Image 1 (cartoon, rainbow, N blue to C red):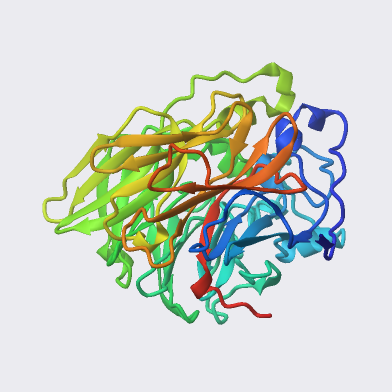
Image 2 (cartoon, rainbow, N blue to C red):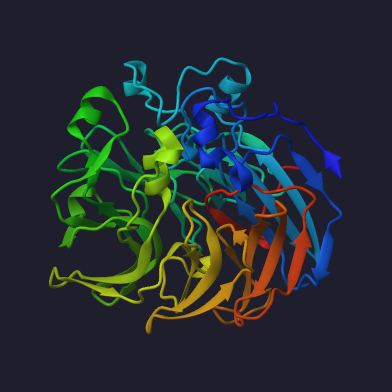
Amino acid sequence: MNQTDPAKPPGSPAPGLNALNPYLHGSYAPVSDELTLLELEVIGKIPRDMHGAYLRNGPNPLSAPQDLHHWFDGDGMLHGVYFEDGRAEYRNRYVRGQDFLDGQRGESRVGGVLRPASQERIVKPYKDTANTDVVLHGGSLLALWYISGNPVRLDARTLETLGEETFGGRLPRHVSAHSKVDPRNGEFVFFDYALYEPWMALGVVSADNQLLNFQQIELPGPRLPHDLAITQNYAIVHDLPVVFTDEARRAGKWSITVADLPARFGVIPRNGCSTDIRWFETDPCYIYHVVNAWEDGDVVVMHACKMVPNGLRPNPQHGPYASMVTVLNLQAVMCEWRMNLATGGIRCRQLDDRICEFPLINQDYSGQRSRYGYAMSIAPTETLRFDGIYKYELETGQPVMHRYEPGVFGSEAAFAPRIGGAEEDEGYLVSFTTDEASQRSEVRIMDARDLARSPLARIRLPRRVPAGFHATWARGDQIVSAT
């Protein structure tokens, strides 16, 4: 076990209000060090035809929060496991963007989502934590933030920060989490949006980091999109009826409401102009996460998890965090939308009524027809937890489930293609899991073609991996390390 470059320990949260915050305790509590673990205990066998890295981003406060703390406020930390020749190595590193470095020096002037607003925050509303998402682009990683921030590039092999990315100084503003990489040409298709202004933007960056296109898209008002879909020729942007309240827009606060508006999906050529966008209007809904999208003749097909009411009421035992806990309990169902570019029509089909979220696919099929989608099963608990993984056959909507043991909860999984595999589901699903009782974590490898069976391998970690957000798989033959 090697400990490298330990960051400032986060310690315990401030007493009082933060004692009521469940997202600072138990399996959500931050860890205080950065480790490199080269020798790990393995139960079962790691497949030798598995080469690459499973990487997951998430919040990990650098210092104990002294103010009201939202789960989204924690500094970004990547946890990664690198697989090669039947062996595994674990690393975790902070994402060292500019706001992280300012906080490390005690110079941070920007607060989090629940901090009272100030005029300064109208210019830069919230601390950019780069804690939400991670993608592989051009051989290295980009850590991304859900409110749209400065992308941070990291070495995919070592997880060391290389610096904030500006795409050769041409990035007009920011990049949101859930931007996509096209496996066919390596292009990075990203979106940006402004919290209090009526626009969003679409950009395309080449595999060699050149900004190819950037288009601002005017909207009827400020919006809060969360995800983007791509096909071979198009991007699909989301104009959804979850918006800031009038008071929030005036004061720069985080206060949202559901407006009396339809949902709209904008299909725009990736290398075209904003005036080329085609809007498809459908029933009001909100979408956090897209599964995949592709073109079927004149029809653009998109699968995503559509939110449904969770039926929860704020629990007063969480004090000022009661509403946050309720909102974070994501409840969604798998749906398909078909947008006809010839007729302008749109159809929605619900595939299943099981509650699932944080979907993924074999990323080699991103933007093209895929038969399978995977999603995390949402546990019937007050805070957001994943108690298993669904594998959906997208045409029929039929799922197969891998359920964890009682009291064991997972991270968002990633699909690791088998070396030499020819079929879409020929590979493995990888996830961190944590036993709530023992607070011990491990890495689990499951056969994607036989998901219901026991894991092929369980890799025990001598430290807990805190619950977090999004994950990806970086293929070993696509990783370009700076070391």
